[in-house]
Amino acid sequence: MSVEERERDESVFRSSTVMLRAREPGSLAVLASTLLLGFGVAFSLGQNDTEPVVLEGKCLVVCDSNPSAEGGVTSSFGISVRAAGAKVAFSAVRGTNHEPSEMSNKSMTIYFDQVLVNIGNHFDLKASVFQAPRRGIYSFSFHVVKVYNRQTIQVNLMHNEYPIISAFAGDQDVTREAASNGVLLHLEREDRLYLKLERGNLMGGWKYSTFSGFLVFPL
Image (cartoon, rainbow, N blue to C red; front, side):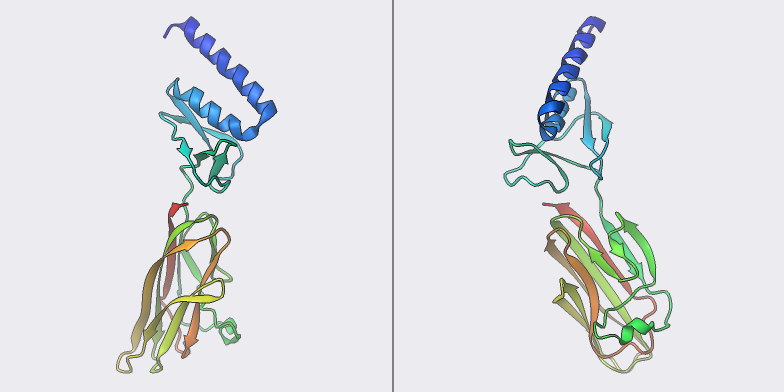
């Protein structure tokens, strides 16, 4: 492509962008992506939907039969440009056997005191609750360790105050045992997940217990 041809194409793109900016913000992202594809350059909106991020290469335009503003920009034609870099993952661990005073409350939430991974900052360590930032398929797993405790424990994974799965540990002949389970869940935006001690107690502590989850893919 000659210098004159490139300058002409860039002038057309700038003019189209100005026209769309005055009409519909959603269409700007779609048209800009389409035009820039011809130059071998594409852009997508960042995770916080603020400034555009310029990417070298190709741009993926997704035709969505159920358009939604979550995870991307959607035009009135049902064409959405999704943010490819949006990732969600967390992993929390119990680092001590000291029992916090919160365990005596009526909710019996199982608390953690260290975060190993918290991409997106959607796990609240103080409340030990994960809140889904978008609709999608999520994976969760947990291992709750009872220490020097002969009682059987039951641990529930709670989804918006309702139990989804449970795990049990009740061997009286071992000093440490874990109640473990895992699941894939279809979550909506702002759904909350946490662990609850449904049966037994953790008087001996629960050091080395873990609670982890991540977004498999958005919907």
